[in-house]
Image (cartoon, rainbow, N blue to C red; front, side, top):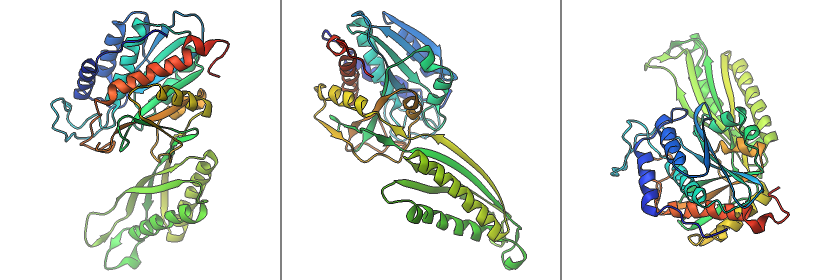
Length: 396
């Protein structure tokens, strides 16, 4: 491949700051999608397909001019979060109650920068699909795109994504051969009993006591029933009950999440959770209404494709160190739906040791990472679709 010239850092920063000022949440990324489509349509050689992922997703196709070769997908998420920004940045959110608190503004900017460079110089063999995906945060935009026929309409041999990682220095990256992010499920549980005067608990059913015992017992499932080498987390994150000092409420509402990596363990934990709810209801003479929702599967890399990412990172001048097989995160990522269909890899790139955490109101994507991310995508294309990579080989 010839020497590519990506957009200058100033241009990348200008794009990101524009996206940051106008955050939009799941499946409502209309302004973001329109702006991306405008910028992509202005580039040569790209075929831009809008309307994916329930309306706001984009797939931009680019055919290399060095002949046939593999087809690969490069994905960036584009949605923001329902978080009130507290950064006081000159480009902070103009939308009350919403902000790019996870760095998706940076992710789409880096992929846009790579598309800009490659569209002007498509010196590779094969096809690239630039995937701008909505609704990563909780709502499964990747699943929506898959269900709409993403991989049937655009067959791919490999699919790749990245995420900025606070705490990891800029210039460092992490690549795992297998598990990267956990699966996650959600639950809403309502316990219904008989309300009564707090001074006369024997006349009712104490839903507060039952809920308290249940929360404690749940931790025993993880601590005493799951092998220590199989990571799992079960957290109750919300409890609502009662309004008065002297009334034991008729109902208590609990909600929370369950996380793990192994699919069989995930199924086991769901069954065990349901059994625990039934036993609680029977013991305390309560009614239990459970809404258990399996959400994202675990994000599991393909080892060979992870190695392609390592090879690409090692060729990026701004990358000083590539960490291998670090402890996976109990957070989750809907790119997992794509990896269930097509082999590929998901990596982390450092956002800085002093970065605020993801989903924090003081978080900001580090602009120093923008050119590094663009160069990573260009390097990965070189590894996968460079002429020397396709002398009788494919990414499979």
